[in-house]
Length: 185
Picture (cartoon, helix red, strand yellow):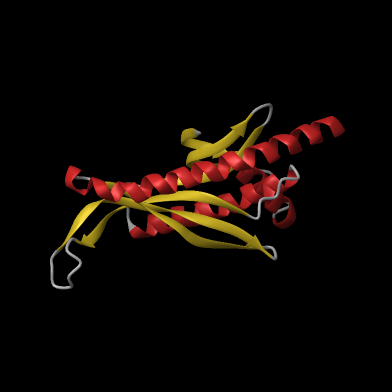
C-alpha cells in the first residue's frame, strides 16, 4: 500500500494515450493522477491493483463527487493496465471513504430521533462488460465515533477482510503472468 497523494502510473498511461489520439499538438508534460492510497503489487515490477480515496467530513458534495468520479476512472485505467500483463480480472474492488457522518435510527422505530454514529464510506465492485465499466456497491464501511457504537464496526471488518482476500487471491495469477512475460522478452 502506498498512501499520501501518490501518483498512479496506470492513469498516466491513459492520459498519454488520450493526448496522442485527441490532442496531437499537445507537447506538455503528462503527470499521473494523485491518489490517497494505492494498492500496488511489487515483486519485481510495480503493478497498480486499485485506487482508493478518503475525504474529510467537511468536504463539499461537489468535491466528493469529483473525487469519486476520478477514482472510478483511475480504477478503469488500472483494469486496462492489468490486461497488458495478461491478467485481466473481470472486476476489481476499491474503497471510497466519503467522510459524511452516517445517521441511523437507533431503535428501528420511525418516530425515534436518529443520531450520528460516525464516518462512512463504501467498497465498490468495478466490472468491465463489453468495453463498458459498471460500478456497483459491494459493502458499506462505518468508523464509529463512540465506543457505544462499536458493534457497527463488525460488518466493516468483515468487508475489509473480503477486500484483502480478493487481492491476495489475484496475486498468484498476476505473479505467473509477469514471470511468463519476462521470459518472453
